Image (cartoon, rainbow, N blue to C red; front, side):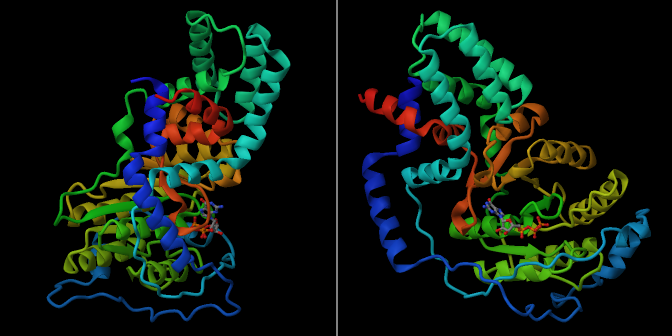
Length: 423
Ligand SMILES: Nc1nc2c(ncn2[C@@H]2O[C@H](COP(=O)(O)OP(=O)(O)OP(=O)(O)O)[C@@H](O)[C@H]2O)c(=O)[nH]1
């Protein structure tokens, strides 16, 4: 199948199915506008500090079990990160979140909207380049190379792409720069998908078994928001979800997760601020099992003061989880903020060395003009980007999709090509 046929099928889906879904989308939009986050003038009430979910028949308290586990955590680290940030809290309107399956085209449009900044910066420069050069030659390639590097695509990926482009241009005897966006798009998808297509799916356990997803990442990257969005996504797929407030360090983190729990309609298992995250995990697993939940999503604190402490903390959390459920956590998702560019890569490297990261969630892709970072992450770290954050709304967290991503980058050029490739 040609690249354009495949692209078109992916972006637009099956026309008949789409028409039905599209009507459903519109109806849904008109009768249910998304509740917006509002700032509270006063902090939300904090729940009692005691353990929230001891179930009948539980033999041992979480604290006893966790104390059995010996980890040489550095006590000085506990107070290292200074004062708590003031967090934005949300007013919760417990709305039933009945979701209809979005149309393929509406998801494509989300990528297009989310990549607007990158498109306006990078792609418009590519368009200028095309207009200035008209003929594909070595100077054109060199300038294109610079533009790709500026968009944070990463050196190795740019080199690989340039080799492929040069080869393709020669092979097809392309002289004119017009339409080069289409060739770049095809080659970018090719590079991204090399051999790792299926890893984008979450590693979900069979029905009736609990899937545990652990979230790691430094503070401020949008971890809590992403957990809320993912919970919403899984709930709308019919899964029951429990959240574990394992970030007991950052002031407000527990309340913030509770706000999301209320908003999405998930129980949040929590203890008081400063308590042992591993104890929270223990409680949460017990609670999730008792409630026969499908998925448990665990928040963790994102302290990155030194790798040994981070490793110790994550190791302890890991051990508690896998003692209760062998092979869990089934996913360790690292949240990275796309707007921090190369810094995100450094963070990723540290977390990769500290724990077995199975996937990346790249938040705030809509907030950067350097959306090429997706490609650099893939190439440098060899960890799949499983989700991208394309905005602040609940359904703005989307599974990463290479075709929709390149469409987001080159929408205008590709629209023309897609029209010309009607068949
Ligand atoms: N535009 C945009 N904003 C996002 C995205 N993901 C998160 N945010 C915003 O980023 C801000 C920080 O997100 P939080 O989830 O509160 O992150 P945090 O609490 O500061 O820190 P952690 O939870 O520790 O990561 C919030 O205002 C979120 O709405 C995204 O994909 N796009």
